[in-house]
Image 1 (cartoon, rainbow, N blue to C red):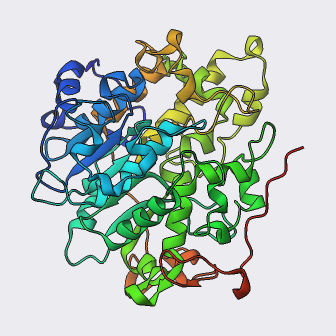
Image 2 (tube, one colour; image 1 turned 120 degrees about the horizontal axis):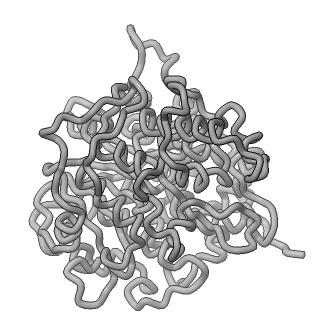
Image 3 (cartoon, rainbow, N blue to C red; image 1 turned 90 degrees about the vertical axis):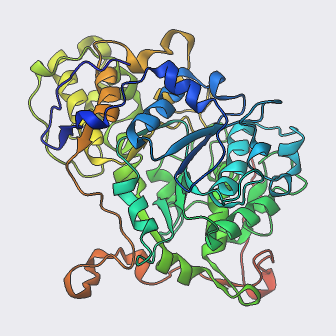
Length: 471
């Protein structure tokens, strides 16, 4: 990538000190990530690509290379795979007993087998004892479609490492059921041997027992009592619509996130496990729509590729507002509705600046999700899908574009803000609870009293997800 100096464009960003700039070439870093290195400490950032790092889409590969540059030498960035003979094969890090049979035999089917293979390895990697190292693995899982915008250390990891701090797990909070408390599994941080991560991976392993695809996971006895994605939230996050793009199908796709719900909402006396209590005492959060998916909240999907591809002309713009709250940028929806041949260049340039400087200066990371998109799904093609197309594989670094500036910001600029981690122990002066989100003060969901791997019973008044009927 180019190291040529580019403007910060906002007081909320500053240049990284020269001592923290990694001047290695992308090829040098790619060779490092692709090599096998024994696990020696907890500061590991894990990713997965089924066919190996070399075969990862170019823009995702540059994401991972960017993690190496941003995190520095204290962190080991690793990408594992399921390629026979690969030094970074999953089984070189995870015991076979911690993985479903369909993963081991490569018999997974359905629309998204690679995504679910990724689900199957992330929790063992953050938790389990390595087969080939004395120490336990641990660290951070991050999806390869993520652009990292600041270090883990001063965002959440220093807090997890502090023996006087009660937090042991960091996750991204995202509200999609009736009462808030859910998470997204694309960014997970934990200390080694964590009891919540262990139970989470046990439940997920159980629901994949004797299965080869995700279809119907919503009916599994361990999660069927949790219900569908809430109607109001489904509309807010764009679930519903044509071609089976339904809350039913999305529960199957998000089954690992539902397993998190199972663990946080169960009290298992036999294991002395109180999920709601652990969740409040030992897990800290950032909000997805503020820190992870803010790019999508600020700007309609139809505009993402258009703005990234614009020539970089900040001279046509004014300085953007320091922080724009979640919700679309003013005028963004109207801009998306204007035909291309009627769009004003200055207005487009300002939209690009407002959008990209805001997310670069106010987000921990940006997950450009391809999600469950497919032709005919009824959704606009996401940027993550466009950048995989043969004619667009290098659009994320195209010289002289806003996309190139965004890449530069991710590795050469630093935010001036303090990351707003939240949890029950992070209060104001004199223990002021007003800084603690309402959903963390008391559990609004019904809690299951049963063994971790015991189902909820209809005879106890639980209602289950109804069959999905298609017309």
